Length: 71
Image 1 (cartoon, rainbow, N blue to C red):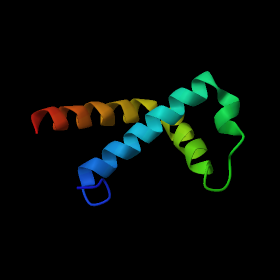
Image 2: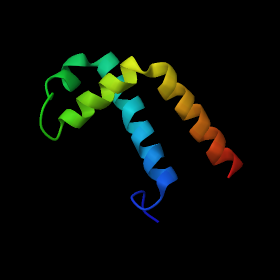
Image 3: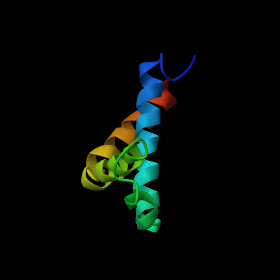
Image 4: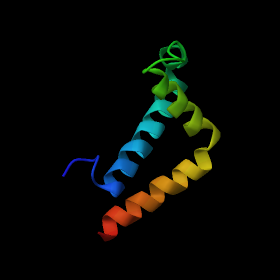
């Protein structure tokens, strides 16, 4: 089943996107910052969410990991 039809999988994909973009922006800020608009702006917005809401994102990652391990 693809991630589009499974709610848990789409949440996992979104969390991984947020965490990856925030990490890449910490290492290479110019790579993410040059595309602030358009389709590639999704990565910039994901990096912003990851930076500003990092405690909540980390708690969501821990909750998702626990849910996957229990399943």
